[in-house]
Length: 207
Image 1 (spheres, rainbow, N blue to C red):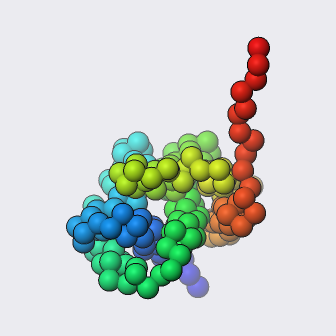
Image 2: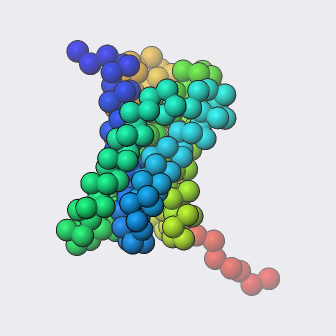
Image 3: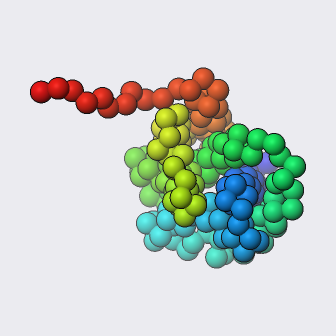
C-alpha cells in the first residue's frame, strides 16, 4: 500500500517533471539556447515551492533533494531536442501546466497544513506553490502570464487546496483528501481550457 510520504514524494517528482516541461516548451517558443531551457524549466518547477518554503521559514525543498534539479534539467534538454516535433506547442504547454498546477496545489497545501495546522494558510500556500513558478516563467519570457489570462487558473488551484483542507478537517485520510483536491483543481482548469470558463471581468461604467 502506498504510504502518505511515498505519495507526496511521487507527486513532487511528477509535478517537477511536468512543470519543467511546461517551462521548456515556453523556452522553445522563445527559441532560447540550452541554458535558457534549463533556467526557464527550473524557474517554473521550483518558483512556487521556493516562495512557499521561504514564507513558512522551512528549508527550500529542492536544496534537500538536488535530484529534482537534475530531473528538471534533463526534462529541459529532452524538450530542447524534441520540441520541433510538436505541432501545437502552446496547447501542450497549457495542458502540461494544468497537470503541474493540480499536482503542486495539493503538495503545497499539504506541506503548509502540516507545518501550520491553519487551513487558510494551507489554501494560500497551495495556490502560491501551484502558480508562482508559472508567473515567473511568463514574466521572464515576456508572455502574458497564465495567471492573468481569461480562463480560470488560480481559482482552480485555490479550489483544489480548499477541498484538501475541508476533507482533512472532517477527518478523511490525507491520501483521500490529496487525491480529491488534485482531481478538483485539474477538472476545473481542464473545463476552463475546454469551454473557456472565466470569472466575470470588470467593465467600465459611465458616471
